[in-house]
Amino acid sequence: MAVLVPRSLAAAVGMLDEHPGAVVLAGGTDLLVEINERHRTIGDELTVVAVNRVPELRAWTFDRDARTLRLGAGVTYTEIAADPIAAFVPALAQAARTVGSPQIRNTATIGGNLATCSPAGDGLPVLVAVDADVELVSTSGTRTLPVGEFMVGVKQTALAPGELISAVNVPLLDGWQGYSKVGVRNAMVIAISGVCLAVDRPSRSVRIALGSVAPTIVRAADAEAFAAERVDWGRGPGNETVSADDAAEFGRLAAAASQPITDHRSTADYRRHSIDVLARRLLGRAFAVEEAA
Ligand SMILES: Cc1cc2nc3c(=O)[nH]c(=O)nc-3n(C[C@H](O)[C@H](O)[C@H](O)COP(=O)(O)OP(=O)(O)OC[C@H]3O[C@@H](n4cnc5c(N)ncnc54)[C@H](O)[C@@H]3O)c2cc1C
Image 1: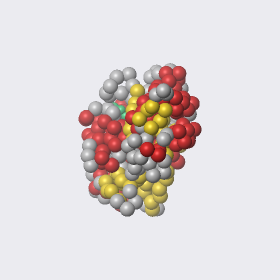
Image 2 (image 1 turned 135 degrees about the horizontal axis):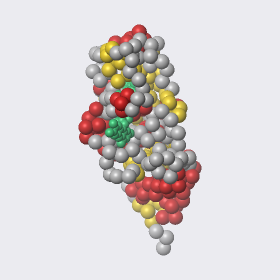
Image 3 (image 1 turned 90 degrees about the vertical axis):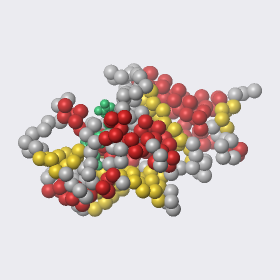
Image 4 (image 1 turned 135 degrees about the vertical axis):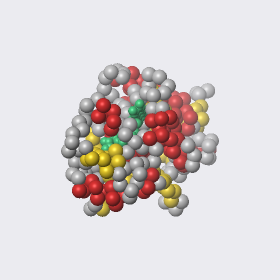
């Protein structure tokens, strides 16, 4: 096995081009588990391209005019969980804080979470809710895909041979946002279900994305349309309200958008129920809930 350690993005994609079938290594928190569990074999022929010393992948930038945060694929969950990134995308920071343990977060990257493309990846519902784009680079150039098109199935992505995720572009919304997940304990747990809710006041939209309840992350379009109509936006920023009945219906609509399975972590029924509860709870954090008189 050969391990190559590029020091620039150009060198990294050059190596992937020269070594078809090479495996990218970022933080290693998914890849090494796969190798340990023998889901992936390492033979003498294998080339690993370890990208954690590529400065372009480690960097993040804020574009004030476009109101977009560009996170290099190698930005870690520890960095995302803290300011300044946390102040820009609070829901992503909340999701980051639920990933594994401090040791895992110190090395696990947003690019690795995307490339693994598990339906339980905690960063992914947030990226889907805010309509993030994934930037892919190879020796042929750069292309950008909406995250919903990048994820094509359980642990399947649109990454082409020789391509590397270089960054994820995260639009900054104007409104409350949050991420909640259900697991069998409070830390070091893969989500049984996860929900991101993100409000954008200027467009009067409520976005909701569901994790661990379908082959990839799904948006609950009916719940979104219902909330946009039923929230009382007229009371001004921070004073919007929703009725308790409408919050309950929002939860039901969100749960109806899930397509959960029963597996070793949960039953499908429990997953569906948990989406209902999480969606309703998050809506109640975004807006004041008014009980009927
Ligand atoms: C103990 C433990 C707990 C965990 N808990 C959670 C959790 O709570 N929530 C959660 O979401 N995840 C969890 N994970 C999974 C993992 O930490 C995350 O998915 C993490 O974001 C993976 O990032 P990484 O940099 O370690 O990826 P790696 O393991 O280095 O790579 C993962 C995959 O992505 C590919 N890849 C990496 N970077 C790129 C790139 N730039 N371009 C193209 N392909 C790339 C690799 O080739 C590999 O196939 C846990 C893992 C462990 C071991």
